[in-house]
Length: 323
Ligand code: UT7
Image 1: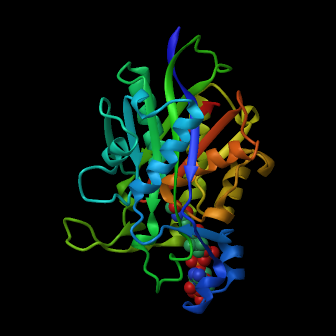
Image 2: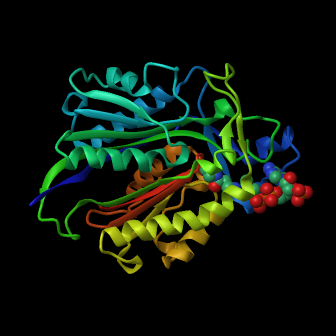
């Protein structure tokens, strides 16, 4: 017998304001048709003035806790993946901890940009299988609307705000791939490429900064690295593409999602796609897609799920789990 991290609940939250592509046509040299054709995005949600990442994260966390039949005091570890923290410190995870009424666990943020949720999930899994945590709340939450350059049509039409969360619990397992839980993880980064996607400011440089991206270059790396990390994670689990029920990719661009699925040998009928409704919500995109995938009746108990993501760093990775 061994210990495995099992999914007990999932949830999400999207801010009320929905912004269709057509809204950008008034201020930018762009069209709904271009945005849809080049990215697959049709609309995105933007947080209201004053609504912060920890507000979004708290709503998603409560939704996931309710799905798990738990409350905040049942959790011993909270990991929040975000690149848009409310404040420089304390961590936004501690604000979520306060908001869900948890005083006995510990909370921290993790920052791997769009790969943040995959990094958080892999770290939560490591804490559980090493016996250091029993019930972990893993959240991805972002307010990327706060770091957009609204004059840059190559980036500001692509991103959105939102949050998703998952509750993981330690459980005994016979270590069989048919049993539920996280089966394998694969994490990577290569700082050689840190100039391809970054924010040109921060605390130490004394300005907030805005997101900058060499889209074409990131695209090229994305397809190759996502297919490779997903394949590696499947191999670590002793499984192949034919075993996959659902690929739940980072939702940045429908063309990246399609090309990666093709490379993996998984048909699009087995890929959860939400990019048309959410845009790119960075670390929130995978837990949002998982939660929506369950709500739609796509992902069911016992399904083999592969998540994969890449973002600034570059940082990328994949997690294979039995739902
Ligand atoms: O989440 C982290 C990972 N991020 C990503 O995965 C994003 C990866 N990159 C992409 O998704 C795509 O590269 C973009 C959607 C950003 C751009 O698509 P593309 O097909 O690579 O277009 P491009 O950058 O090569 O631009 C083609 C043309 C350019 O015009 P010229 O130079 O050919 O005259 C751009 O200036 O499209 C122009 N363009 C636009 N036109 C209308 C760029 N943005 C827009 C726009 N509306 N919003």
